[in-house]
Image (cartoon, rainbow, N blue to C red; front, side, top):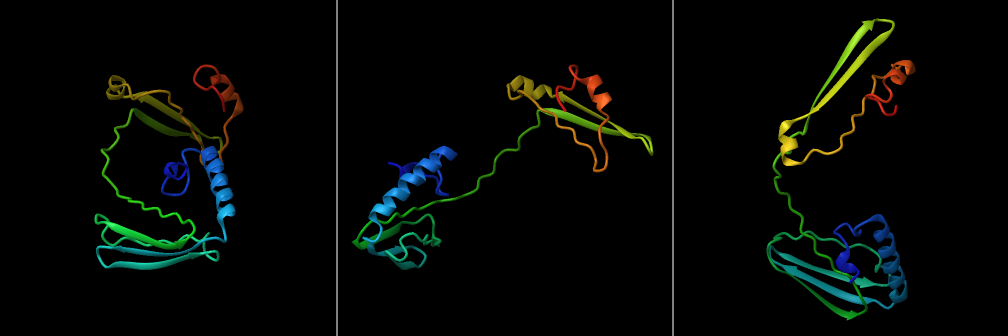
Length: 167
């Protein structure tokens, strides 16, 4: 039951699930370690033929092979005594349609004087296509300054409550 909920990377749904799951698996592995003596035979199309040995010396070592013909059947046969976990993972990529932006953003930098720095103006507006589909929700705009510049606290305080909530 527990192993069926693992993902291909060995984790679980959340960080907490992963910690609890790995703890349970480690406890089980400690209880059965030393009693494993298996010979595994892995065969399949495309010339796949491998022999693996799992014993007390390597029962905690990940053994990996790449399947040359992933759409064909793979057979794993084990002889001996003990427990081993065999995981098969199929990974493939599919093209996803491009995501249309929900906001139009415009950022302008105005140089007031060479010594005083400049002014940053950042504007965002929701595009009508997203408001109709219900895709637009809460938005956060994060505006940063070029390296070497700092904001004037007085100008930020003047905007607090109207367009700036925190800085």
